[in-house]
Amino acid sequence: MIILGLESSCDDCSAAVVEETVEGPLLRSLVRESQDAIHGPFGGVVPELAAREHLLQVRSVIAGALAQAGLGLQDLDRIAVTRGPGLVGSLLATFSTSKALAWRHGIPWVGVHHLLGHLHAARFAAPDLAFPALVLLVSGGHTHLYLAQDWTSLHLLQKTRDDAAGEAFDKTARMLNLGYPGGPLVDACAQAAVRAGDPFTPPKFRDGKASWSFSGLKTGVKLRVERNPRLAEAGASDPEVQGLCRSLQEAIAAWLLKPVPELAREHGARSLVISGGVACNSRLRAEAAAMATRTGLRLAIPEPRLCTDNGAMIAAAGAKLEPASEPWSQNADADLKWGA
Image (cartoon, rainbow, N blue to C red; front, top):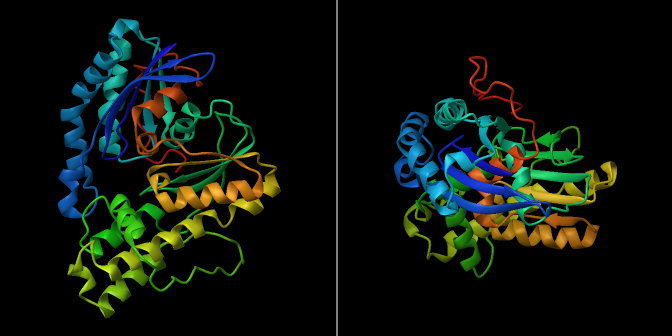
């Protein structure tokens, strides 16, 4: 089966061609257009600008993915597209395009949940993943922990009580004037640090659960910068900036992984999947590998280009789902809050 996958839920416009084989998904092509330069001056994604840019990019990313794969639309067995959740203007760019292509060329069509796509990003490297699995999906907009009984199900166990972990990286980079997006820049600073700065106090909750909150972490960074204003201008080569980034990174990795062992025992999980943009973080990947060794969990983290939003993960998920009977129906629409 040959699937074209399309993704534009936020600020990345991506198309990929995936061949579903007996051994698992085979990536035939992947094209991703980033909007970092557009949103960088604002320190975050501007929805209206993102939607307009997707409209300019969608045709070229589809053409590029097909050209890389050496295929035409007539060679496709299915089109898969992100249906939600996400920014509605961004979602509609590839969602509407995919419906039009499916109708015009008579190609089966399937709408994919964005977070299910992130689970399937792990299928390229671990198609034989043992279930049940805990699935930690972490990005600038999501910090969720799911239980998956197979490749098509996600049961929410917990999520952040306020901000996403990825937002803490972006806002820290903004307060330190490091640039955008913040995750890779904070990671680079942290790796250069000789030692970590003062540790951040983990959040505590009345119910005693190992839950997540990252709003206070952003406030903690803000207070440190206010006490030492030169940090905002010192730059990535400054030892104190590097130490602050390292302490932030260590805190986020430790907090994210804290509930995993207990929940793995409670639900009999055999594997742990970590995906989403924050899964690119070097500290999180290292800590997760060490924890998986201690707990006996099989760890599956996609390669970095498949952690961020991409069409390949949507195509892989679309191969496992039933296509819609009428993709061009007026009732088929993007769902910006689908299960979010």
